[in-house]
Amino acid sequence: MSTGYETAPRRRGLLGGLYDSIADLGAAVLGAIDTFFDMAWFVWRTLIWLTTRLPRRETLFGNMYQIGVLSLPVVALTGTFIGMVLAVQSYTQFREFGMETQLGGVINRSMFRELGPVLAATMLAGRVGSAMAAELGTMRVTEQIDALSSMGANPIQYLVVPRFLSCLLLIPSLTIMAVFMGVMGGLIYSVFILDIDMHHYVANGKLFTENWDLFYGVVKSVFFGATIGLVSCYRGFHCEPGAEGVGNAATSAFVQSFVVIIVLDLVLSIVLDKIYTVIWPQSQMAMSLAG
Image 1: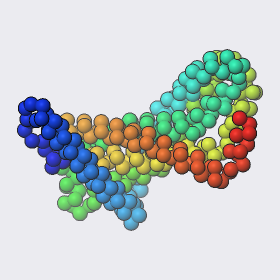
Image 2: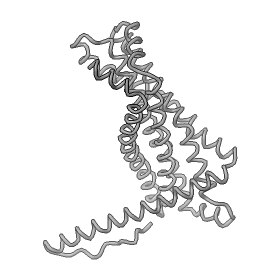
Image 3: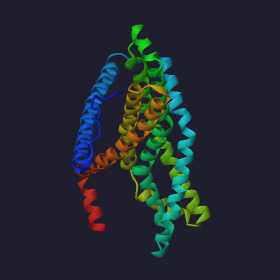
Image 4: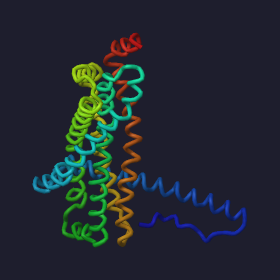
């Protein structure tokens, strides 16, 4: 798809090169602005269809199976090994201070707040986001989306809403699975390989984590899932012609989803920490006194 800001013939010389660089930068900025507003319009239409007419049950359940159920094994396996890696990387430093049993709190809190939701979102973006972009991109290239429109069906309602809903509804479950398997992986490696006392490990894990930490991660995952669904479907819908265009759409879907997820992770961490401070200020005071 052309952006409408094609570059002019290249100029020679230092001034010509400077001029071309400025022109390229301007074209990139204008293209980014166009993409932003186009994406905003795409998101708005998706939300409108989501609130006015839900997708058919068989379409929604089929997407849920592809996106959620088939993603469970890879999320569980990755979460398990991430928990073990955390134990391996943290053990040496904690052992120097005689605080090996504190590993439970570190691993659990890390999985609940950060690694669980980010890991589940990354796996979903890699496995599902790229596939959705490639599938919709192929439909765009082969004019199947245009055929849907000609038959009176709205492509946004028929193709995007079920995928968006599936990502939105199922990523919290995938996040909980990643957290659980990461906690269990860290526990198994710490207790059975590193020979850390299980009672103190579990006690410290409970002491340094609370229900808010799980809520913290699940809330993040909802935003991550919405990002993956919208970005992937947008890239598929705006795929350029040819096999190369489909491949570029799949790659762009993953890269852009991952970048937005990282930015959202920072923003949501700041916001949720502020909310926690407002709701439970005494907890922050107690932590400051303990430090």
